[in-house]
Image 1 (cartoon, rainbow, N blue to C red):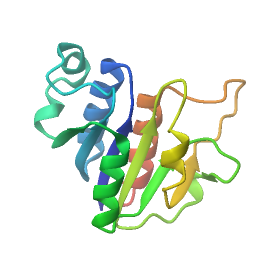
Image 2: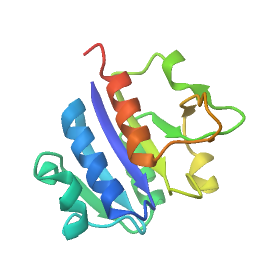
Image 3: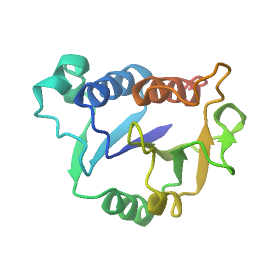
Image 4: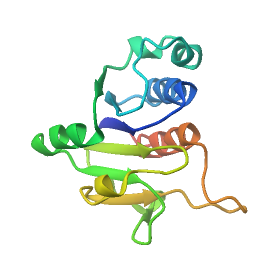
Length: 151
């Protein structure tokens, strides 16, 4: 299993750090694409939650998420967006390929609409309470561990 994580304008360095730590814990993450306003790894707030995981997972900053998507498309990697849309599928009902990219979006706005037009699949985590979504870092952890559960 090879997983690429694309962070589409994640505004909180703490969320980014937490995603690095979960990516290391789940294993199989080959690269984290830090896009747009997403902080670069030299931010001390990021390291406060990453606790050194930035040294374990390769990453690169892109001026736009579109650039990261273009690179992944050129490599032939299927792209899954984690976003609550009408056509999104329950993340637990998917048979995932052996290599894929996961896009996680801005904490309030979600994944940009132009990016959603270019993905291969949209997935979501069903909510059983009153809130519509989880914190992006928690969401990433849940999905990473589900995808890697059988590896």
